[in-house]
Length: 504
Image 1 (cartoon, rainbow, N blue to C red):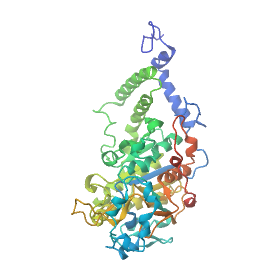
Image 2 (image 1 turned 180 degrees about the vertical axis):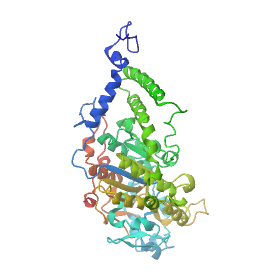
Image 3 (image 1 turned 90 degrees about the vertical axis):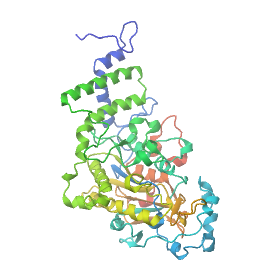
Image 4 (image 1 turned 30 degrees about the vertical axis):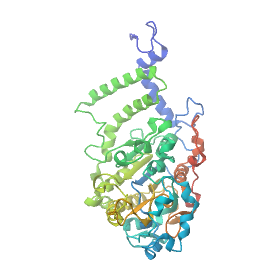
């Protein structure tokens, strides 16, 4: 019979039942059983004690099972991408007040935005002509700029939402786009975390919510933009390096060792965690740490395979632009996203901009033409390649692809009182810009919403960023209101409303 030693939780040399179960190994069994119940559960318990346990099943029949969320850091110009405005070229060099569209300056929408006062807007009232040509694309006839020739070939598979708006005129909009809240309102769960929380995993050997790209270095939301916040740290995104040699720099062993040796080390760490979990049974961070060790152990063998791009045929590699230096980096990111979804990852968050040779991302305060010419060339072919690849594999039917950016760019030329060198750029513009979706039960070839003639305000079918969230959740079979967490009050705008007009 095994000798039981006094451990944490003992009193006068006696061992509590909870401590005995943990030390005897049944604590680990409980973890495994809990994971199985989480994976196979049929309903989320409504009690305060159980709210953090996802049931793993949708509220109603879903149209999609996975999401690839592509986010351009810095703010892509909507008027030089997916919502061209010929009036800008016609009246270029004139102030807004000198055009027939001076009414845009009196719009009540301006008052609803922080850091976007009329004083600031006065500096950007001289219109900047379009910096690139455009043409109608696809059977749907959507106007797309010449900077996106490859993605233009996918126009009939995409629903363009030209009336997105947000309220932060600074880069905190990155956080707002992912959580629905501004910096000064505090941190809230990200859209990826809500998906993770509501549906659970499709593959026990991979993270359920993966982050690819330069999120840590440049995203003004930092980890909060992919964080679980009050849902618990186990629902936060897991960042992977798109590096075939070192995809898990913080999860691989420090030195080579035998599998049995590694398993023994892992079991020892797990035992220590179990002892601590007895002392701190309600510690969400500890629970997340235990789960992360379990997942990290499994990931050491499953993750490297994701980055074996040599397994793909030449046609696929060319489709993503892997053979060209200009598109190789983002091409690998997009291909990795497809390979992850193919293996059961629920939510893949892709960031582009703000690191390496893309400097400050799409934040083109000066020389927008040079900035957007270079960056669109990096991402156009890989993004189109992702859509084409998903479609030819039959995966676009149940994979929802979202393309977004923190805000658009101003119709007026950037003018800074103390910077005479700033020329040909556009400022941040939260009043109206474009987001698009494809696959996962979304209609293709749809143009929904509109901005005014100058691309200043969203004026038709306006959608705050949480409408994008609600649409994603709806296509996954989730009702945001049924994901309510006891003790965590949400505002009406936090829930958003699904955009039914773009749904098939």
